[in-house]
Image (cartoon, rainbow, N blue to C red; front, side, top):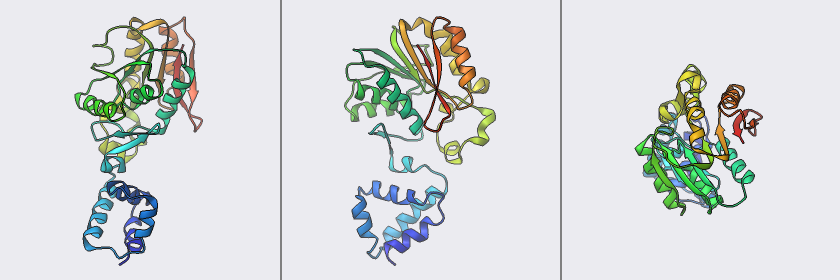
Length: 270
């Protein structure tokens, strides 16, 4: 049997057939051209068995990023495993907006709930002069984030903290992509996410608003006078999160921004 026949046979059972190619190529560091050339060759029993194993894992809804051990974000490569969320394109929009809107000089930045470190590390890469602190309640997540900072050659200070419980100092910019899915909305979440990604990084009490409420109550102590805040939100949370921060920061302007799909995705406090 040729490779092309094996791949066609095995990938026919997948929801996203291209994922089999993605996983194999990245596990074996094959270029697209090398993969296409291989399609004309006969496949060995060993390679067919390996392809079948990957297919089985994908059919069990294991994310391809966890299988290969990394995900791309803002043009960088981040180690990911089931201790951290797989960074999403919507969060890239958050990072790029922050980087674009804040270009003057050095800033002190706090990334709360850093997970894999995607936001903190990407901002550090885009603005090497910024002094960035990243926090998380999970020690396992912090270990992943630290390794990603090292691999991407940036300096970030990491702190173990439940929201702001262990944070010190003041910051010119606070950013967070906290858990914001309501437990009542579990049915809307993909099976691959529910089965594999850390629940405490996905779901929050009080209809997904619990962490925003904590931040709104505590952030004034850690934000400089002219400081800004940016938050990723669920697409149904724009107005309620906007009202929450307008109440807590009546002197600041709070804006809801949309993502590339036109859905509410970012709240900016300035």
